[in-house]
Image (cartoon, rainbow, N blue to C red; front, side, top):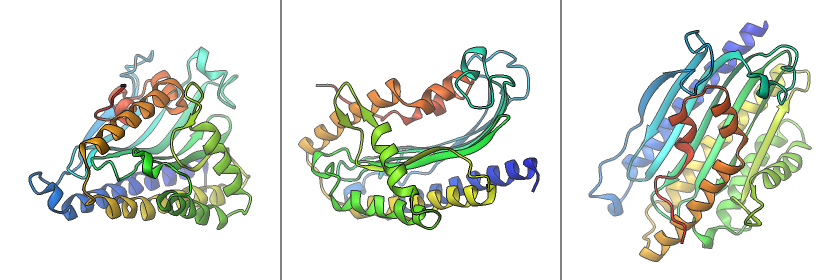
Length: 295
């Protein structure tokens, strides 16, 4: 395939994966039990956007865009599943940080980004994204990580954490036995709050700048990461969503959500990338929880 074919193939996949995960989340909304009897099942609302609302120069030019898909439901207090394809030129400041962009600032990027904040404190929040980026070089990146908001579930040996990482390992091992230990460590190191000396969640995988020289293999791996998340995360939420909770459980959830917000605002590279390349501000900051607390 040509480079343009690769781009189109990746774009179509990210949008397909978005549709599949949106459908899985909406199914959970309809299956919720008596705890949610007084609330209607939620559905995603989709809002198209064009790149440039972040203050990028040349905002009058076609620079791509995407669709922001937001769910404010009964199972998912807030979930955002966004697919976008953007292009243009990196700013003078930013191009020095991106491989292949220092001498030629043009870029193309497509991907899916997801954050889910369940209402039930016993159900884990989660993050997932996969993407393809092209400058004079090209690569894939992404991953998924589990973020329980209740202290009782934040031990890496907890069954939910074990099940989530096992799903990611299966996706990795199907392609390269070295991927999982390497990408698990990358996740553990990256999703860490140094000012708190604690991990944001209980792990998963994180990878970036993946280009083995075999585009089809790298794309297949990226697809399998998305499929693994689609398979495991809705199951984990489904197992916990009907578990009763107390006011104290909710208090603990809100405090941990504060930690999540701290990471995304202080350290998350995806947030910085989106804001510095004229991405949709509402979409980028939709990762923040609907409610949080700093005691």
